[in-house]
Image: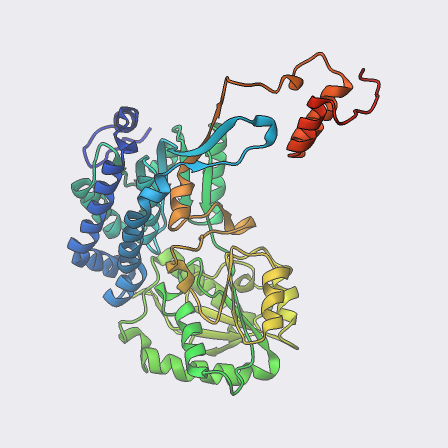
Length: 495
């Protein structure tokens, strides 16, 4: 086995045992501990802002404004939301009981799962690491965070800062290659939270199955954007800006909820393309590579993967804007394609880059069948004021979420669950949903010894049958009448 070292330089087994001892001590269940860790996380984000900016610039080429918008700002908001709601989240909830259980009381008591593993992705190395960590801490767990090795500067900052700011006997960062991830997956966890590709997700699921470990899977998929005709009632520039940011202006399209392709009517396509060209120039300038407003491709492997998609002659013939690539700087120009063949790889796999196919339809309603014929996406976007079309998209398609007239903004909503369905993942988080993802709601039932429904015990007869039927139907009056002999019971073979 490869030697596995962490911030303290100790071996894996010793580090995990320290986490288990911390959990067994009970201190992570205390509200004071949870609040102290969330406040420490808030201090980390505020005090190490410049370090985070530099790491994101180094690894992915993100501009500080984009980094704050998509990572630091959303995380600060999430921590503050958790701090404000923690008392309510931790509180037990009374549960209603049937008549047959009278006199009794019951409640649901939230308890932490225990030792959890969070495996995050490289495209939002801070957001996708710390967002689930917020929920895990708020729920009272001890945590191992495995950030992606593909963003080494960000991984290093996470390891150094979390070790300095948080309780390192309860929260640890383990860095390393995929082999390190394999070693972690061999361990027994109380929960695994994974964000990444479907391919690696299958490996995680297989490992988790050996220990019957519950898993949250945040994967991806090809998220469509249905763009209806931009008639006179639309603010065309606002709509197209939102489309472009949903593709090119967020990590250069390397985002699981980014727009993967557009569905629109054939008669509207030329208008849409011209509007997009004009606004790409307005947003990113004549030379997007020099604009400092588009992130670069994470590494050469992913760059060559995207290049391969474009090199297909059938795909290359569909390019109507962009298409230039700079391998030395890992930069790909915002590229628009119209009707690449559906059987090509660019329409068969998640693009995860600044290549935007537009698929034309005879009428916009055809988008529903198109979406239904493909694997369930993480998100469906629809830019339309057609309420009938909107209702059909909500009720006739299946996806992790549906967002109308904007893109990616739903990720920032603490009151909405974030997660997929089918091949785009399962489980959900953000806000209270993050707390729930790392919590077991324990049912606690209390029964009085002062009285008893004697008719629930043998020997059986028709009299007891009638009483039981009344009790399960919440019919107090019938029970009383039968007991008093004022309501006749039917004869049966049970007598």
